[in-house]
Image 1 (cartoon, rainbow, N blue to C red):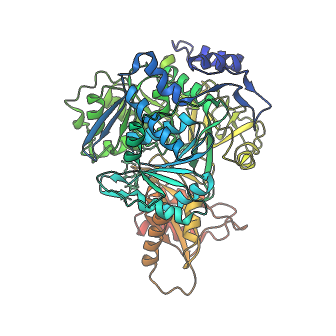
Image 2: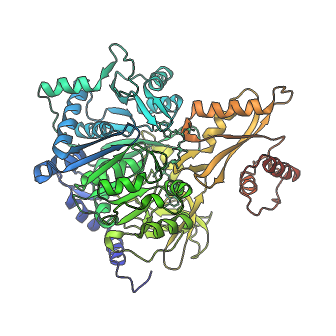
Image 3: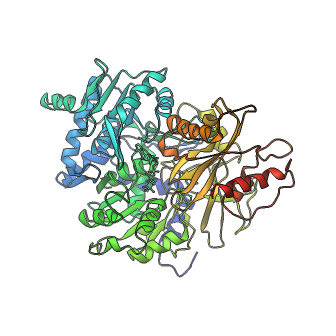
Length: 638
Ligand code: COA
Ligand code: AMP
């Protein structure tokens, strides 16, 4: 660390290290609890200990009600800006409280109680946030599913979460099409062995849905009736260790992992970050240009800004094409956004269409202070471009669905540390980050290894996977005893800066979206003409990586490979969803394997990425790699 730095980071991190319980106990004072914790950290509870044992409170109360009570009733809580529907709307904290309490009463009338699950399948509309907060208000556990997933993925999540009620919208809107959500939802429910009792459906004029008699309820009508009857559900007391939500994320198989977030630690950690990491004051406008279906959306569109008494921005649009690459600058100016949080891929999309940032001209961004990036590695070119064009600090930070907030960052609120391009900077308080080799031994500074975090994880991180403690232990805890395995690889330099270089498993990152190549392989292998396959992520100048599937067809196959390749692209889209962005299927004669039969995915990736590669000593037949190189060259892939 630069000892001349004026940042308070060093002393803050040291304070946490000296006494984690005192540190988080102090941070917890920013939350209004019904009953404070009896023990800040209980090492013997749960899988690796639990935070704020004994504490009781409510997330919705802290995110909404207490702000209404303390003078923010007329402050805007949510700004909705939707270029795809040409509409804009605001909700004050008082209006938000009314809408949330009303929907919560509707849910209660449908029999939803504390601990019940409610699945949310909605696009970027304010009602989605109202739905999440209504669940939090009555202690129900929400599980939001991203709109770009197919019915099959939705069905898997319904089966795992067993929701009593589903909150849905009739459609989502992509720039090139209206996506009818309701038929996807109906199909998912028909595929699932578990059926919800009711679906509350928000009818959107762009694509109204047919409602199923008895099961489906019109959102607007139900809320209007509840409001007219004066119904408003109060906040229910929940334990800090009770789950607030389940968010499914890609695992190494087709079966997603249900990441559990507990209510108390989440409030404490997110509140700490708004001030100390993001440097945001109550009342300011914070914009996370993500989607509520991802963890970034959960933490920084919904909970953190509201817990901090800020105004959050819900943007239903894209960085480009809605209508042009100036969309972000227009929104920042118009709504006085002080900080934007987005994925590097969004900036690459803008840079590609408007390299000189001509669309920024004429927009007054003088109030805009910081750009935060996460979701994928921030490539130095993109960071430098953004710094030059915007003239504000561009802060990369590294985190995962599992952690819910940044593991490593440059803490703006504590004072920026010197930026090193390619590094998300330093571990945040709560995270003892170490780099280890395969034998779990620490490696010297500058050496690549697996990135692990010493247990316990800080407040806000997952305590377990939904009803799967064993899978949680197997996935994250057994490989490096005493540590959480991030499944990211990288190194730390002499100054303690972390460099995150890629995954150690088969997860790939497509436009900031986390996807499992194993899951795609399962789908491709189910095609009757496919003998075997391997999916890898290949470099892409816009999305960072895109999946590319290599397939070996069954012998005797007569149909043209191009036809089967098209079917495979369609199959992945149908089973996983458009978000997988699976467009490259390549027929090969054989897959390259080691003598023990392991597919050489790493070497295939190097070939496809035009990186230097050599023939591995363990390879069964080196000619296969040359064949693949030839095919990729002929097809112009990589
Ligand atoms: N509902 C239905 N379909 C969706 C969807 C949703 N909520 N979100 C995306 N899709 C579809 C898209 O329409 C697209 O379909 P297509 O193959 O028919 O074109 C496909 O899924 C891939 O979507 P996307 O990854 O968004 O690619 P894109 O080409 O439409 O846009 C970017 C590219 C870079 C502009 C876009 O990915 C982007 O804005 N990324 C920001 C990343 C981000 O928010 N990450 C979250 C973590 S911070
Ligand atoms: P998700 O769970 O969808 O948030 O994806 C988490 C994964 O995205 C991490 O494990 C990393 O592989 C990658 N990732 C997220 N942020 C960064 C970052 N700032 N730098 C490098 N990789 C990142």
